[in-house]
Length: 107
Image (cartoon, rainbow, N blue to C red; front, side):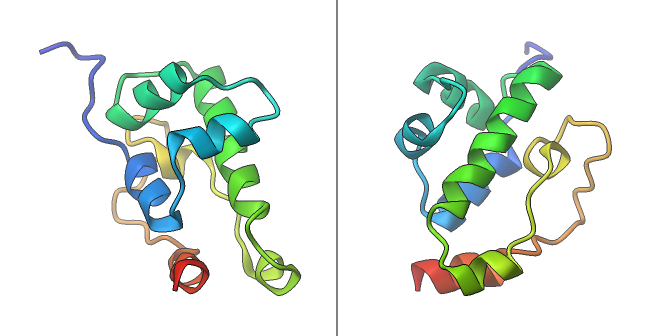
């Protein structure tokens, strides 16, 4: 097994919780994110820090565009350590501070 393939990432689960697709992020990205990069990020192909940050920024922007003003005040931006289990500082036991907001948005 290739050590660069780390299995499905928290990003994958969070995108599903927010109702986001790879296409949503590619379309939203101010940094020209590609479908191939998103597929690799979600599947667990180890990314560079620069690429993790690019995906992280785009993920936060995609969520931000879906929220109303009241929801934006409650939204806590995700860090790359929340989205990737191989990122320095990742805590597998950490709870998603925005889980209720995501449910509210999709509910």
